[in-house]
Length: 170
Image 1: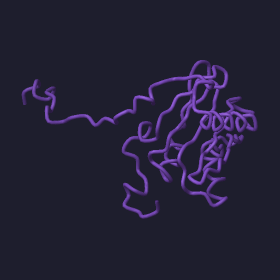
Image 2 (image 1 turned 180 degrees about the horizontal axis):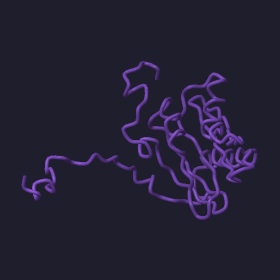
Image 3 (image 1 turned 30 degrees about the horizontal axis):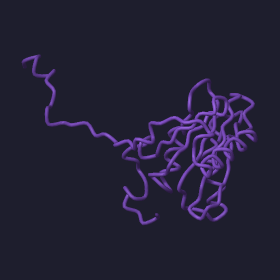
């Protein structure tokens, strides 16, 4: 076998990409965004203050906007048995569902890590995809006052969700 043939690229293979909304690339400060979104972000900051994070000292808050206008907040809750820890985004989703809400349009997530805007972890992305694979996500760092809009279909492209699994849950 010719060793050069194993290094050739398949020219027919094209990578899949997710088109990004131009507004998703913009970072703004809290005073420069829509007041309704600023309120959602403020609720995530409030939720972060309730965090139980004695082990990592990494507090996260989330504010989930339901389709009917209700906002449900959640914070991360750590456990000495680390796998039992629950993230802020999942807490908000579980609370919302337990209160009868299953349609979500946006979530604000607040975490502080230097100059970084903290995004949901992989498990939280999957939890959100169960209810809205295109949900808007506002990332906020309360130490820098920065906010950035992204979306779940950007953070978790080609997700496994009720739509892709051909389930009629949504």
